[in-house]
Amino acid sequence: MDFFLQPINLGLMAIALISGALLVRQVVQPGGKSVSPQVAIALTDKEGGVLVDVREEHEVAVEHIQGSQFIPLKELPGQIAKLEKYRKKPVVVVCAAGQRSAAACRLLNKAGFEHVSQIEGGIQAWEKAGLPLKRGKAPAKA
Image (cartoon, rainbow, N blue to C red):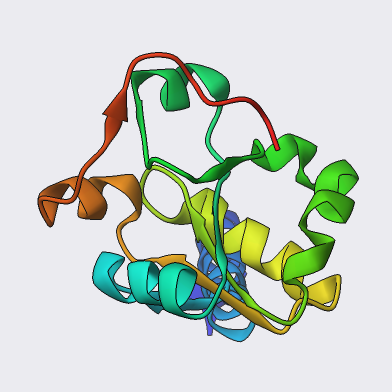
């Protein structure tokens, strides 16, 4: 019992509890469902959905998916109205690797979008799948 009362051990237990709570939060509050790049193409092309890139402008300027809407994550709360016509259609979100797209999916779900998903592995997975990327100038913001 003395083990639990030592200050250093109390600190370590607190860190463990906080870490566990953060992990549970990620599981309980996931982003949208994860889809492969190929499924993302099907959702946007065949079902009239939209692909939204939530990376920063300097990242998108290096490479981006042709035809994607560019709305940086930090600007998304104020730009949701620009996606209004996709409220009942598939919205596929992409970022570099999945962190920001998960946050964007949560935001869109809370705003009432019905079919939100994210590309599993982000733009890196898109490139790894051998799918085309446009390089150079960033597209205009949505």
